[in-house]
Amino acid sequence: MSQEDNLRPGPAAGTGRTAVALDEVDRRILDELVRDGRMSIRTLAERVHVSRTNAYARVERLLRDGVLTGFGARIAPEAAGLGTSAYVALTIEQNTWREVSAELAQVRYVEHVALLSGEHDVLALVRAPDNATLRDVVLDRVQGIAGVLATRTWLVFDEFDGERGPWT
Image (cartoon, rainbow, N blue to C red; front, side):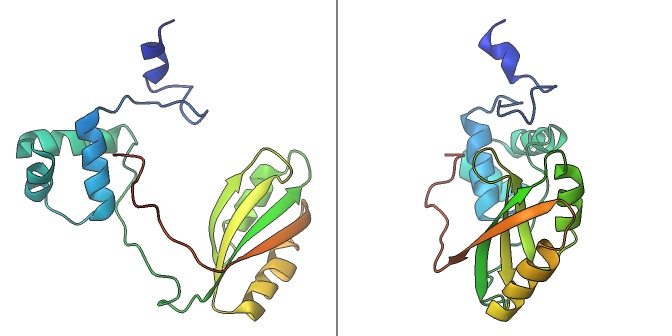
């Protein structure tokens, strides 16, 4: 089996392998759309130096292949009233990931959840209005989920996005 065979969509998707091969133009398109998902196809084509038809076809393919999963707004948490952010690591009972993740998805202020390997099983990013709300989210809502054995919380003092995304 060649390395090219590992790049096709299929069962390998989601296992840490790239499901679709991206060329330089695809990566530039992704980089531009991450910066401004509202730009027109015309502007996108000009910025990546391809025809409008090519840009449109590539965006459609990236959507169809599941590389692009949607377009959305980036929100500044503090400006939106969420002044406290924390990463919460969870230790869960074995084989309870599906149930725990379904419950975590319903907890207000939980922005992102990841299943991990290593010392902790799950990592959740929580953004709350204040420390009291964060305390309630962690101690009442998260620790109250069946299957959650323990939590560990790290407050976020400052954060930033990298200057270069993985697409360039």
